[in-house]
Picture (cartoon, rainbow, N blue to C red):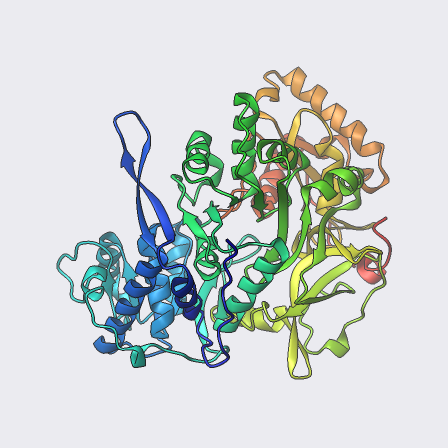
Length: 586
């Protein structure tokens, strides 16, 4: 039976009303399912909540917060493990008009505490240990007045989440709001600088739901397994059941694949999202075990370019008519574009292997984009930019209703990231690449990661692709050593674990082979034999375990070159005319 959810009226701008609509149409359908131990034969037991139960419980919690005195616009940090309470608390805070502050604990204590301090929260909705730490560090959070404990409350004040769930519902207390009202603050990973707090409005979330649903044809009644907790929030707004996987979402590369397979089979999961690192592990397991997940018809992967071998394995591991998609975007602008594994395998992978960059596909219907001439400083107005023709390398800017308006921490970054255009604005993605004749964007790396040599810029993704073709190399990073404009390009390569050389002669032979690859291609010919290094495990981002942290690699590479070769970086030089901003990526 086809289930249709109505679009909320303009007067109901709060994203929480999407859950209410789902509950009206399919109240008895499971909304959230999570593991709750195992049976004696090793199978999972599950705890679940229906859409009707989730909607009613979030209404009660929202009303409890409003009666307690929490005003709309209050910044409340949510620190709860992925599961029913996480989704329940998020929608309750939306309905109360609070601004949900979401911080990835995987970014490490130092970044977490700095982000929490900078956001100046008015309270915490968190586990007992979170509240205990808040009290211990209370000087950091002088305005944290509204504190809700998810679990057992110890010696501090404030209600528990379970106590708020007993409140009576008064719908006049629920915050209807406007689409421009603040809904959440979500932090960037900090992969190219300190994490920044991105302000999401209710309208941003509503249009994200619409764009994702329509592009991928997601239907109410489907079942999703999100390897990243935030993607579970979209499901409740689309009438899709969320199955919480048994994994540490902060370490997707360490997922136990058999657990993912069991959850998919137990709940006949139709869709799943995960980082490339997660699907690399799951795909290899399915290949070894001969596993085919016949109910899984849609796999999404994002967070970094997805290697073709990951796409191929996952395509074989799902339903024959299923598809793997790689959406492209950023914390500040999501979704922007998407491409399918079939298109990658049939057309773009071979070009990528030759250094053309990674094709991220065509833009979503609600997105406009341009490639402009690279500029390293702020651009206050669109009139200061130069739009480049198709095929020319530049930086990508986007606009649309899913694009967020501002940072609310590290606010000085707004001047760099946003370009005014009349009453609107464009967002600078911080990515370099080009548009092809089919209006597809080819990603060639981060703007901040390009290597500025005396002979012009070198871009990470096209150069790294040349070395990734070697059968013994898992991944590599192009970094620059020395001052901008006079940088020495260095390739740091990570072999596959079972292909890592054990002896010095074997290491030297592998480096020689990589050097021969470099010399065979014009874009990598500047890399000399002594500028190729091997690394046992390149550092990656905390959120998806997929993006290489090139800033750390560059520091490591410079130390190695200094100690091994007595290397001294060249003196700074003026950037070549135009900084290599003209030209074609073809």
